[in-house]
Image (cartoon, rainbow, N blue to C red; front, side, top):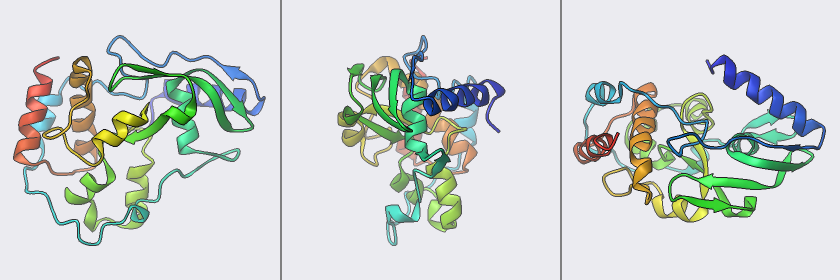
Length: 213
């Protein structure tokens, strides 16, 4: 269940959006990560608890098996929710986000239009498929793809999101090294909750990143 503060914040944003007004939010904290990010101080223990396994086959994978951007009410969807949460001075047309500013904590860029923003899945859908989601139902994969209660969805630069693709931390890390600590914590938290496996190289990379905390 989402923390009480997160629920209240989401309610305030929904009420403001319904009025067609502008909302100003503080998108990032001291770590540079936005409010949706976790900071699991027990990440090392959690990492050691994850099952190490080789990446599974991509056979049968299709993004449509991870139904995402679910309806969030008032003609909004999950993508709109993340844009509101992570943005500053966000403006709406109805429920659609049409303006604002976003700090892309992966690469330190400031984005001044929503067209520059992608919503990244911390653990990419294809990576989840290779680490256990291939045996889930579509409903379970949809819950994963729309998870707002874990640090799984973030507004970041389109460039960083597309550079990352479906890679794990052994082959892609945020260009901004000051993001490595929280990125690793978030990755581990998501994999732990959803009981996904990690490869040996993935674990080694995460351990290195936690060393920057």
